[in-house]
Image (tube, rainbow over all chains, first blue to last red):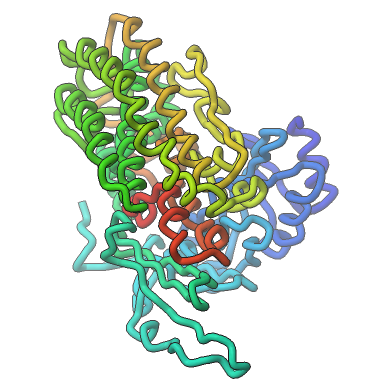
Length: 150
Length: 381
């Protein structure tokens, strides 16, 4: 499907979405509250985005940005969904029931960035030890023993 | 990660309704069948698996954080330490991402060398997997046969790249050195050896009735679930998903080659095994197409001493022996990346394990987990 058709569908589902076409794929900026209902529509609707191939977070120092790379195994089109989160209290709805792979990926983002995924079935630390403090992939994380500054 | 309280959480006491009690057993972190420090906490009811919880992080090095303080030439070396059985292909994915950002044109000779090395790596990785998989299921002999082929490939790698496992051969702009003078001869000899000896593998493993009855119908993953869990590589293709990046988004010279994407539809452990075996034949075919047609010329493009990616975001993906490996670089225009994310195939494949093994017997777990081809440093990163 063409980019225009994708845009049109997303605007009908989420009128506040903002688009950016500077990158390789169509970037869609949404508010965190809009993510869960939009995710359902992206997977079940005509666009058939059934494959979430990358889920990650970026710390922009002023805010955190969730980045979801979606693709469709039927139409082979891809989009990037972004949602900016408050750095002091980052929270967004989980999509682990829509794309099952995000259950592990969200746990990873939870421990490394401190993003809280609401209604996640099993939000615990996956890689770090349970008593680990801090969020290592945030830019202000300091570890004087293990981190070597070049 | 694992904490002490997990050990004493459950007992073998019968449940309140008189049913059999739950039993929690730990597989790993040091277990011969997990091939690395993976720790599975398995909840059993009798012999039936109710729940599998992977505990990761025993070799977590925070490679993504490390990369944020390394230059665009340096960070590639770290990625060899992730999926060490596909080191070449990991390096290739990173090199391509830097090339995409800086719009570096890679010489034709380097492109062909990259594909040759990738396919040799794929064969070596699958050979190791088949040996280890057969050993998990109790057959010790195939291990020696598959390692004989793998050793030959490792020797070829050592001659040209100077290393057997973490080659660090792909650099932005091409490859690090030119091919060793003996490369052509050695690869030809390997192809002949592989074709001659590969029937042994069929006799020992593929047509082995014990192996077949232990893997057929075990660990079934449907096509929809494979997509939903993000399973790629032989795991996805064993479930009928067309997910070969070499076909879908061709890179290097893959679009000029004739090879088939191997897809099986059964979705069980045997299908995943067959995908890997057939992929080795495809890789041999690719090597045969290229080995006599390596173009002359430069093996590395001229690049600046200090690489700087323009401000922006770049994503590339390559097909490793385990599946889709994605490199996501966020650049602020500096000499080091602002943020790097590695989308490792093993991490997503492992997330499907609970779904695949739930309700089956614990004896089938190794046949299910083995076919995921887990490389733990790739999952932990």
